[in-house]
Image 1: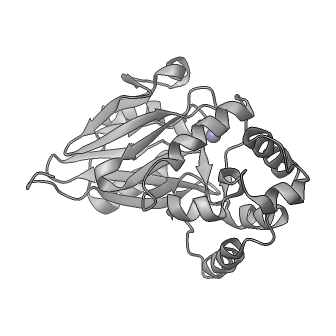
Image 2: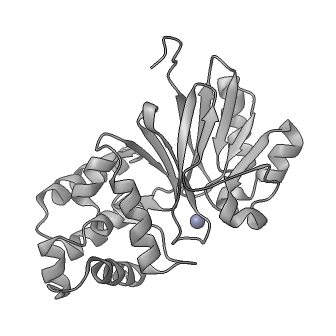
Image 3: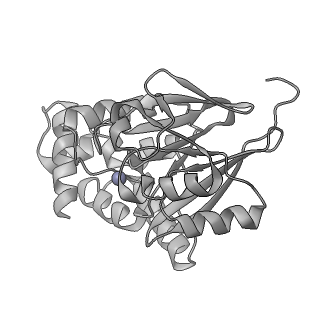
Length: 260
Ligand SMILES: [Zn+2]
């Protein structure tokens, strides 16, 4: 790392009913990005509170609670909008199209871009490897994953496996506070997972105090998130799918969660 390397500042704040907003700030270059645009007023308040000026929007996918504020913010700030090439037509105001294998340079901080289709066709995630942080939109949640609105189980399982290759200490910022429900569901498919039981209790305590459960860490997700654990004997026994493929177990888990 160069001597001049400065920490990527991250400011997280609630938006809408259960979304989170994120501001990223590179102090040296005076750059500020919002990851997605769930709610313009909440983003503007967060910017004012930090005395930061918006320079970039980094979109993960086209859903209204992620890209709905793009045009208003661009009109007000003349910021640059970065988003998935595979869904460029559905990202309002997109200036820079990126996808799998690209590196997006944000001042001193570089994000490796991954295509993660499944929740939507053109979902991308941003992995700032040197900063040990990733912004995963609606691909991965704490003990959950995004619903398969536009993709197949095969696509989503393939997408999630990309995230599982990141170092275990990678900090994961996901876009919704769905954790308590996810933990309750996870316990129905993997009731004997000790790490999961412990974590479900911790999550309930955090929520009782009004604390966010985000960010998470990929190493902990690999131990407790049923959507990353189709190899688990406990899950396979619960679903009576002992000899099924990983993607079949993943697909069944996702189906059950949709009905939960
Ligand atoms: Zn979404």
